[in-house]
Amino acid sequence: MKHLINTQNLTTEEINQIYNRASEFEKSIRKANHINAHIVNMFFENSTRTKMSFEMAENKINANKYDFLADTSSIQKGEDLFDTINNLSAIGMNVVVMRHENNDLIENLSKKQYFQEISFINAGSGTLYHPTQALLDFYTMKKHFLTLSDKTIVIVGDIAHSRVAKSNIELLKKFGMKIRCLAPNNLIGEKIEGVEYFTSLKEAFEEVDIIMALRIQRERIQEKIDFDEYIKNYQITKDNLPYAAFLMHPGPVNRDIEISSEVLEMQNARTILNQAKNGVYVRMAILDMILNAQGL
Ligand code: CP
Image (cartoon, rainbow, N blue to C red; front, side, top):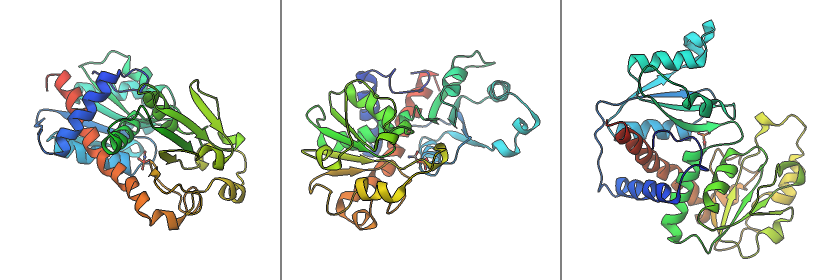
């Protein structure tokens, strides 16, 4: 694996390999010592979980990490991002972990020729890709259920603007899961083959195993959102949450919008923090595989 750009291009073998390696890191069966590796974290959009989780993973595999601060960098003097990364490559960076608002920029940058070999990991791009989130979600589900092919997941919320939904759908389809999306018509977005779409929560939650709630991405929506209407029809509450449902959310949660505070205090919601915890092991596995492929 040279780069990690999206989940479409991953094979089930690669996904299982990441799962197994992450599990070995979690159980402390595997250790990694990448003292000669240099990783630069370039976040052009806000982040708490992904950024901190990558930093924790980089520390745990004994790599050298660098925080690129766009606001105080020479990008402010007009430098092109390709030229910036080419210089980072010349300085000796081996891996770029990047988050960017543009859907295709990270993929396009990964296809260019640099001064020295440099790998790209997509830490979230626009509304399309968030592969490390989907991989940590897969890890969290598989660790709990062992087999996913007979399970049904409902992804509920702002599907239209969610890179988490799209990356999860592409990954989970490969493992034969039944995938439902639930949202009001204005938040469904472009329909994806193999996914069942619902506007009624009652119908979507019938015989469901996993519920993945999503944040409404106010920063990507131009038109006015009717939050009262959304809360009335789609908020996950103690009354509509199926008793045994495995409740997930990539974070950040907008408390009392997509999930009620009461539900967030329930045992079902512990999964959400386990997702954040598992993200460290999954990112350790991804970095370890990419650095190994570079011989580092
Ligand atoms: N899930 C996720 O990407 O969270 P952050 O935006 O805080 O990184």
